[in-house]
Amino acid sequence: MANQTVFAQLMSLGHRETFQRCIERYNGDAYIKNFSCRDQWLAMAFAQLTFRDSLRDIEVALNARPELLYQMGFRSRVCRSTLADANELRDWRIFHDWAQTLIARARKLYANDSFAVDIRNTAYALDSTVIDLCLSLFPWARFRSTKAAIKLHTLLDLRGSIPSFLALTEGSVHDVNILDELPVEPGSVYVIDRAYIDFERLARLAEALAYFVTRAKTTMDFYVVESRPVDKTTGLRCDQTIRLRGFYSKKHYPMELRRVGFYDAEQKRLFAFITNFFGLTALQVAELYRARWQIELFFRWIKQHLRIRSFVGTSENAVQIQIWTALAAYLLVAILKKTLKSDQSLHEIFQVVSVTPFEKVPMQQLLAKQAIQLDTRTGTDDIPNLFL
Image (cartoon, rainbow, N blue to C red; front, side, top):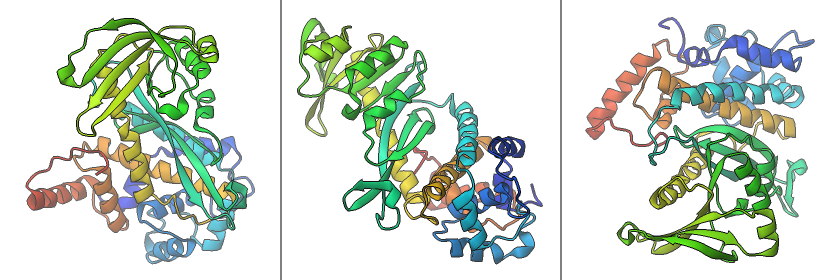
């Protein structure tokens, strides 16, 4: 580690053999003499970790220290035209599969993290975010008559804020359609907002022995089967067993549902939640939906700290590659945080890596030094949030 650059130390956390299998699955290196898929991955990861916004930025920054490129893992010189061609022509699924392997590793590392709600079930938040594009440069991503966009659909494990499922679609794809592609785990809880309410699809979730928690629509037609007493000092207003009464909703979801009313004194708003999970307390149902805010923090964080709003290529393939390599870089930093048992947030680790990629200092030593500086400056080394 002492003889490796900071960048090489981070990249070494991604198992090279696993990435090679992803390449071979799609014949990524077939007929390629120079600038392999691994070189491409390293260049794109470097761009994410050091906040490079263009192909020229990547080329200039990397070639500023040409004597270190081999030690950083590169086997070819990085030229912007070569990188542009690679992003245009090589199969984006190589990097999609690579990100999926990192997701599996990161989730294992964060599986025992504490969670705001005291339940044993795995809890997920499902939502999407729109990534705006310029219609004249990205005509394949037409969203509206004068606008282009793509959507990043994310299923976030609320323990550790690690995405377990990601899908990229056109911006016009409605959120509810992603429920058809969602990998359902029996016993898990899926926290969703009202955009995903489709009782036929929610019934399939229930039939797969999974649970959901969502907000009820104000127009939902139902009748109360049973009411249970609640402690109104906690904010709860009702805990009911209900059945749907609308013709189609009753046909698609004939089972009983649970309806929980909760008054948020801070926002001075009354919320109504529905779920098929009768094994929770009413307050846990409300707390689970509150925990859904983590996915909004995740989207805000990746848009601020990853290069997924300005793109170095304009084709669909290049955009896919940039987004999947950005997420893979994020996951590597999350893996580093757990591997080194660091108290630093992801934001702080990104900042450290961004200014020291060529340095030959052990990462543990580098982060420890940064932690001491933070402790001296703030009087505490407690970082309450993974992102901030």
